[in-house]
Length: 81
View 1 (cartoon, rainbow, N blue to C red):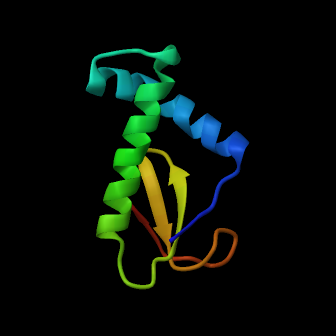
View 2: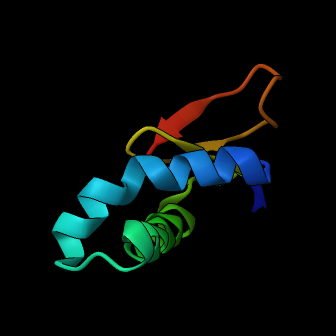
View 3: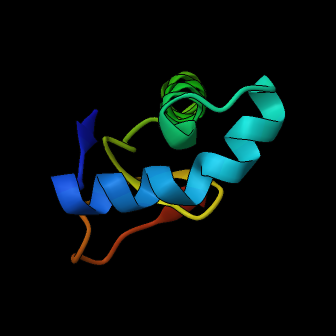
């Protein structure tokens, strides 16, 4: 699978996960970014395990990671996990 994000977009996505991640893990290390990264890894693993055939592209999105049949910016079939 091919991730589609840049460092700025990835950092912004992690920041959106902080409060949920702190609640889930019950700790706040490095301002919650360690927990946010752990939650992101969980989303990533779930996305890889549940992607449909032909969904080879992924990008961070609200509430998790979207999988796409085509790279972002092209006409794509989306499924949010």
